[in-house]
Amino acid sequence: MMQKRFLSKIGCVLAIAGVALIPATAKANVTGTPQSLIDWDQLEPGWTSPTSGQVRTYSAGQGTIDLRFDLGATTKFDRFGGGPITPTISSTLNGSLGTENKSLHLQIDAEGIGLTQGSNSATMSAAFKNFKSPLTDVSFTLFDVDIDNGRTWQDRVILKGFLGNQVVAPIFTPQILSNNTIQIVDTYTIDGTRYDSNATNGNNGNVLVKFASAIDRFELVFTDGDDIGNINPRGHGIGIGDITYTPAAVPEPASVLGLLAFGTFGIGSVLKRK
Image 1 (cartoon, rainbow, N blue to C red):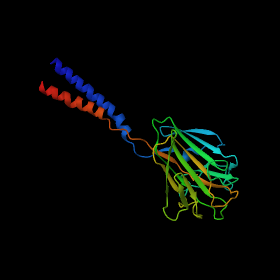
Image 2: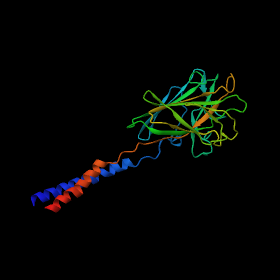
Image 3: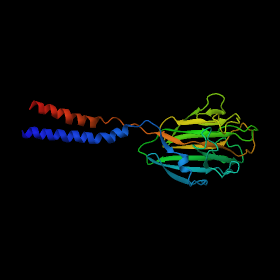
Image 4: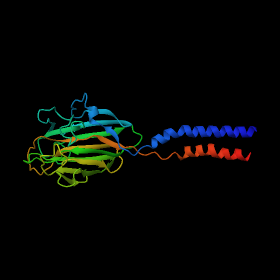
C-alpha cells in the first residue's frame, strides 16, 4: 500500500509539472507571423530630424534597434517643398497608403553623382541588439524610387544585410511587376529608371525588400545613378516603410510532453498491476 501511494504521488507531481511547463513553451511556438521592429507612426510623436552621425535607440520587437544616419562630405539632408529637413516621418512618400500609414522620408541634395557610398551619398544603418538570435525575414518597402522627367536627379539605393562580417543579399520585388519605374542593377542595387507622375502617390515606384537569410544589421545607401549625365543633381527623396521580421519558431517541447505522458500513463500502468 505504501508503495502504491508513493507511485501515485510521483505520478501526480510529474503530471502537474508537465502541465505547468506546457503553456510557456506552447506560447513560444506561436510564431511564424511577421512582427513589428519599427512602426514609424508610433515614433512620429516627438520625432526630430537626426544629424549626421547621431545614433538613436528604440525598443523593437524583443530587443532594440540602433538607427544611424551618415552624410557624405558633399551631401546634405534636404526638405521637400516647405516641409521640415529630413529624415522625417510623414505621408509624403508612402505610395498609396494614405495619411494613416506613414514612412520615413529621406531627402538628400548632393553636389555630384554618387553611384556608390561616399561623398555624394547618405547612409542609414540599422543594428539589431539584445535579441536572442539574428533576425529572419527582415522586410520593408521602399517608396517612390524613380527618375526626374527632366533628368536632374535619379534615385539609386544600395542595400546590404550583415550577419557579423558576412554580407547577406537583399531580395528586391517591385510591387507592380510591369510598368514600374525600377531597374534592378545588381544584387545590391536598384535605380529609378523611369519617370512616373503617379510614383509619389501610387505604387509604381515601390519595392519590397526582404533579406535572403538572418541578419543582425543592414545598411541602406541613398545616392544618384548616372543616367542623368555628369551634373550636380537636384534634391530628391525616397520613403522607407515600417520594418518587420519573423521570429524563429521554437521546436515542439517533446521533453515536456514526454514527462506529462510518463506521469499520467506510465505510473498509471504500474498502479494497475498492483
